[in-house]
Image (cartoon, rainbow, N blue to C red; front, side, top):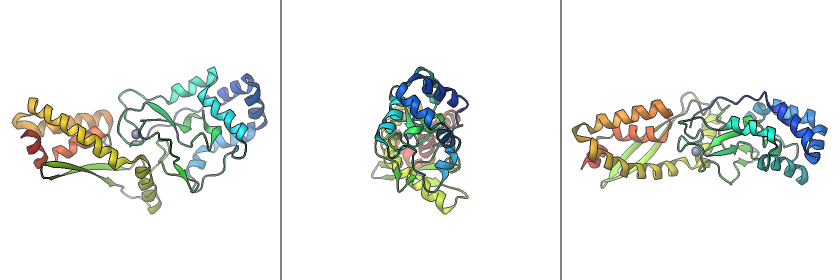
Length: 265
Ligand SMILES: [Zn+2]
């Protein structure tokens, strides 16, 4: 869970110009709707931050919907610029969840409902597979996800992992701190977490990490296990940010003495 700088959209018009001159079927639609499309692209931020999403330009036309969807699935040569632009940087965690490095491109406004944004760079978000779900994030004309480029909420969220030990078995809980947030922002952050199934996925991840951590501590922890854990946590935070899963896990372990005792036993 981290905000990202928005990609440069200055190449959009070039790409859509290229599309307009390259394929007969789509080019006639793009030429016909040019001013409406420009309006949507220019208003993208307003569209996604509006409490109720407006209707897509192509909500009522199956043929046109398909034409734009196919642009993403089989993009023209010039559109590769857009995909390359949205690809993740090195050492990067998924901006929706803070977990695995992104391996897919997610359409924030899904292309089946908003096909005109299928190639629009601000709508393309590098994402892990777990967050890029087939189930729709748009319900009641609202999008459950927070937008990594534009959400003021996502950049202010702070997660913390707390560990409780019951009969030598660790239980991992994620607590969320949302300082100075409005009721609407808190509600959106809850819907985001529910949509990406954050708690369940983090708990599964942490259980696997727990076994690895036990092995590592046996070999290199010794009497300085806690210092070792905190060093790992700090390195993770510097490298991947303070909502990355590895940081949260190691920070949680480092702050839980009973957990360290069990790991060293
Ligand atoms: Zn993710």
